[in-house]
Amino acid sequence: MLKDSSHTSVLTGMIVGSVIGFASFVYTLFGDTIPSFFAVYFKEIGAALIMMAVFVFAIAWLLKAKPHRKPQRYLVKVFDVCGVETTIDGMRDEFKTHDVAWSFMKEYKKLYPLFNFALVSDLPNSEKMTIFRYL
Image (cartoon, rainbow, N blue to C red; front, top):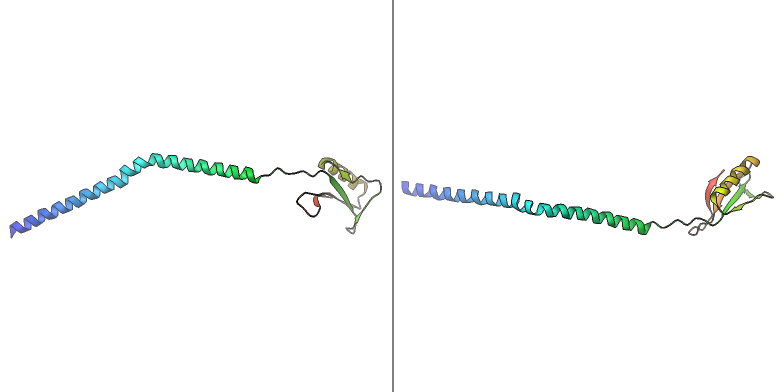
């Protein structure tokens, strides 16, 4: 009977030792060896993915950003105290640049304080006139 129990304990010890050895091998393989082998590649792949994302974003932004078309002419619209559009004789109301139209509009506001003025233009994609400034 002692022979069987010692044989069983030796067999059990060998099985436990084999399981612990295999577990240690698997742990070392999957916990250290394989990750350290692929870590360099994963870092490079991560950097490449980030750079690709940056380039895709930049290309998408460049394709989406269209050059803004400036209006070819600006108009100064005059409104009386009730908000009805009117005209003032001798007043220039069509301009080619925004800055000149804005300057004239400020001067008109000083000369005619009871009137309101709107700087408008006809943009290509708009059905109505677009108001840029209002005094």
